[in-house]
Image (cartoon, rainbow, N blue to C red):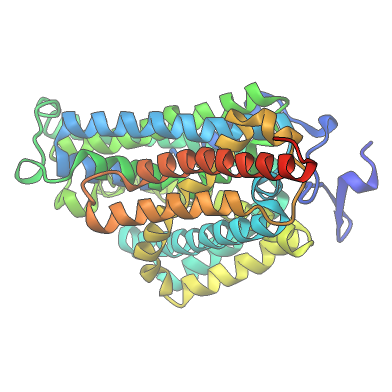
Length: 443
């Protein structure tokens, strides 16, 4: 039986502890299938199908699929490396960042990302209500409230609930996506998919498409340690992330690409690969019921994961419990969704996404490529070198975002953050060595 320190007792209900402030102990690590289910069900969502369709509409099928594949391979390397580190240490993102940025520096990183993912929670809760109203005619506000409370309850249970939800959400997506494609095939055929050239021959640059693919999961992907710290070792942490990138995310994006390239979506550049209207277009009551449940399961997967990231991050910062922060952030996000301000979040969240990847790049560089040096380093409350490298990476990404959007600001941010960290580490190490020699009087 687990000790009191390893459980949370909430109103007589005993739940597994979430280890917000310490690494997950070996006794509580979970098998690969369980951790992989957490990540596998997260990106296989209709939102990713929408983005896959948008890319295809603006690039054509062949170029769009190429960008989708390359973007997923970059995510695979990025999230996989961070997950390997988390599985090896058992640390959540805030603890992981503390090793690199220092305790106070990690507060800045964790607060930034935990706030961004809470914004995504609010956005997706509002989207749930709006989607149900548009597709089924139900009133948006009551649906939004029910959705917010439901997703809060699932997140409150903890990582185990996210794993179960993932096991349901991913197969559900695959089944209904196949149904949608079969309906399209029966109606108009799929013969023109491969040769689809996009809207007006395609207008999106390859680099911009890469950014869209990467930015979709830049936030929670950087915070992957919150999920993969439950892995038994680094290898299984990386494999759990692999189930999401490229596997699940690629499936979702390609579904949207095929549906748009089939010609089944009106105004594809705006609507992307949203196949829900195809399922609800007078194909029988059973399919409509399945589609209705699908909205909650599918968007609920996104909401619960984002809320979990936010709750783990803020609980570490404030020294409190994940479940308490789940309620606090869940209420705030649901109120934002009910007030309708969720619809104004998208551009803001996407712009903030530009500044996220350099955080992960600095962590990977320090803990993986410069592991020997970082292991010898004494703990510091604030590591200026790491923060400066992040600032350079974020600045480079922002410069590309605003002046050369045809290139990938996400890729530039990752490379600039990593390279600047290596250079700054060498410069500061050389300065320290010189000062040490001068102090001892050695030439």
